[in-house]
Image (cartoon, rainbow over all chains, first blue to last red; front, side, top):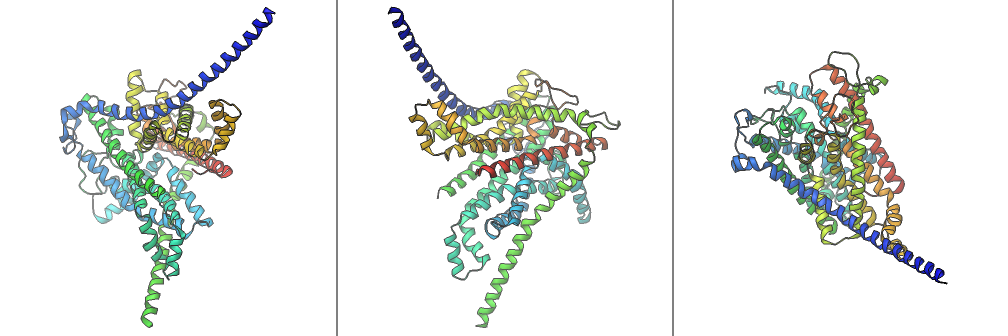
Length: 310
Length: 284
């Protein structure tokens, strides 16, 4: 009797500990979900603080004039970021200007003219492929085929024929960033209500007039967001640019002269920076790059969000 | 009457000119793509043979040599990166879809958005200070961690978006049967969204398989065959970068072969993503 009762109690205790363990496991599970979500946040904050802390020596010794000092000469301990800021701005904006007609055309073609045909599908896949090709392959291709072409072109128009330089990098960058603005633009143009377009057609508008007077005004801010996201890509792109920009720290005098961008100077000089200030000046460049791309991406994302909720 | 007719002709003409321009510019962009593919295939395919795949690079001036070290290194680094990123990414994705409006998910979502836009070279630098400098040596594992950080946003986003679409009554049915929370999530919700999660993971791998910049200061490269993840390791993109910018013809040839293999690999990953998304009709 006592034995049977003991068994019974034992069973009950086992059951309780079992469900207790289940509850505990559930709590651990919930907590680990939360921790991983927290980890992502911590990584981003960690990235920012690491950059700030590591660039402290340069911020302290060089101050704010670092941004517009024009000489970058690590041998004589002079650090000025201006040539790289200018190089980055020139390459990115030039690339943006070159890429806009193409990404706009692709967005309109896939969003309005040919939404379901096989040719449209083919073009869509090819545009996705452009985004998939690794940047070092772009760089290699540009080095071998694009540089001689640009050199010929430069000889013809009578500027110093380097071949490499800001112009060449802009072309490569332009090809690489087309997919970002194009695919976003296509999505947004598809979202334009067909009642609006049909209304315009029924009033006798031609296709061009529909695009210009209905689709464009409706998607304007979204297309701007797409362009901003491409700009973010162009600013941070490293490998392809490093391979074809020529890598000199002299201020570029024209769009055909060689130069350096922030990302390319980091890629080139980071492992050979032997002094604290030198190294932290490079990290300060990375910090600037980080902040600029974050701001641009945030603005772009904000615009898109407003778009999809409207 | 004639004026309106003229005006109409002008408008129709303008519209067709616009149509022509759109088609022209849209298809012009395929020319550089085809040129790149043609070049890589033409230069690369002749280098590919058995020796190219199983030997390590020879010194300048010697015939032959291969890229075995880079192939193996790329494989190891990408696999380790995926092993790190997949659990963390899927778990945060689950958290974000389960807690849509908590304060942590707001900040976490913002962090994912920021992380997606961070230039890859910046991640390389940060990992250099987090892992390479304290441990005193460049290592493959640091490269994997840098790549894993780049994979996270893609995996998190696709997991969150997929799980959001799963009807709530599936979850409620699970709870009604007395299942504990973790079993409902891991046995009911995640299997339902498997296809979307899977395609996110493959897409993330495809995105980082060709990355060079974060590996410059982490995995660093290594001319010899190495399987030790605590030591520097060669990868395909690093090999292409180093050899393409070198002045030697032999090394250029190796780089073309490596480019060909890298391109095929990435194409395959993209095609697999396409097939997965098409088969299960996932929206990414």
